[in-house]
Every structure is written in structure tokens, then in C-alpha cells.
Image 1 (cartoon, rainbow, N blue to C red):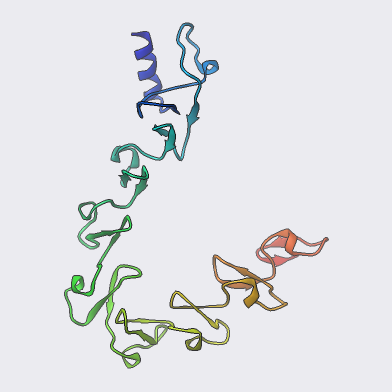
Image 2: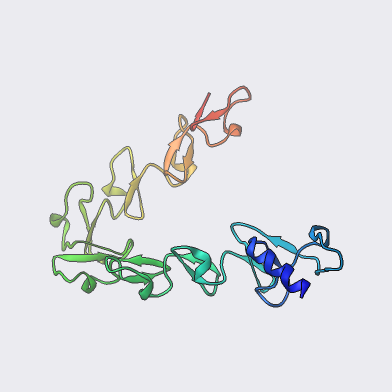
Amino acid sequence: MKTLARCCLLTLLGVAACGNGDPNRIELFESEISSPGITCNPGVVCAVPTPYCYESLCVACLTDTNCGNKFCEPSSHTCVECVTNGDCKNDKPYCQSNQCRQCLVAENCGDPLLSCDTREGKCVPACASDEDCSGPNPVCLPELAVCAACAGDADCPMDRPHCDSNKCVACRSDDECDAAKPHCDLEKLECVECLADDDCGAESACDMRKCL
């Protein structure tokens, strides 16, 4: 009874540990147990962001109740936006790759003038040719029937000469940058002076992507 009470108390305090067997099992190092006579097999204490133990692995969740306003994906035991369509709201009723989307195919948009941009799962004005597109998205992608910034490098301006995922960017690797800004920031896909101190001279440091 004392062991059961102790484990219940630890559960309330949010302490969980990895061990073999039952995913709800609580295990702590013996040195962390203050009450004499209570012993547990040595284990690794699980902590945020993976505070729960399942089959000897620390995971983010065991059930939906562990995920707040998200849902527990049963195979990876991670908290995600959705697992099934029923987890999504009316404005984005379809679940794909654990994300709620407005549409999966053009028919989901319910309007012949709209098409589904399946890259982002949202309804956008449909196009049949470049003449139907304008502004920052002047190119029609016939396979999707949606307008985009580019279909290839030839569609991009001089300052952003490369087409990456139908967006014009300055670079995709260091090879596409010049000597003044030799490094490609792969998050922003733009050329910069430096990404780390090692990219600068011995007496300079990298600050805000510039050697100072």
C-alpha cells in the first residue's frame, strides 16, 4: 500500500521515468527515493519535452489529454494538430500529414473558379495559363492550376535568381553566393557575410549575419 501511495504521489507531481513494461510505470533512481524500504529498478527520468514513458522510450504523449489542444499521434507518440478529419474544424476540415487543411483536391473548394493549392492545402484562384496570373505570382502551374512566383529559374528576377519550391530565392547553397556574401542562410535562402564566428577573420565575430 505504501508503494502504491508513493507512486500515486509521484504521478500527481508529474514525475515519470523510462523503464521496461507498463507505459504508466513510474521508476526513479534509488538515490531519489526518500522513504526507506521502497526500491525501484534504476531508470532514466523522463522530462519535458518527452515526459512520458512508453516501451522504454521517453515520448511526448500517451493520450490526447497529454497534448492540451492538440492530439496524440499513436504511432510516434507526438502531439500533432490532427490525426483524423474529425480532429479538424469546419474552415479546415481535412487532415493530411497531421495538419488541418482547407482542401485536398480542387473539388473540395466548391467553386469552379477556385483550385486547391495542395502544397499548402488551401483554396486559391484557379488558372489555366499565365494570363490568368499577376502580381507576385505571375506564373500558372498547369499541374496544380494555381498561380506561383516561378516554375523555373528563368521566371525569377536578378536579385533572387533561383526558383525553389515555386518561390524565387537568392540561394540554395554557398555555391550560389558571391565573394561579398559567400554563405547561404538556408533558413531565409539569402546570401550573407557569415553564419558563425569561424566564417569571419581572426579578429572579427559574426553578429546578425555580418562580420564585425
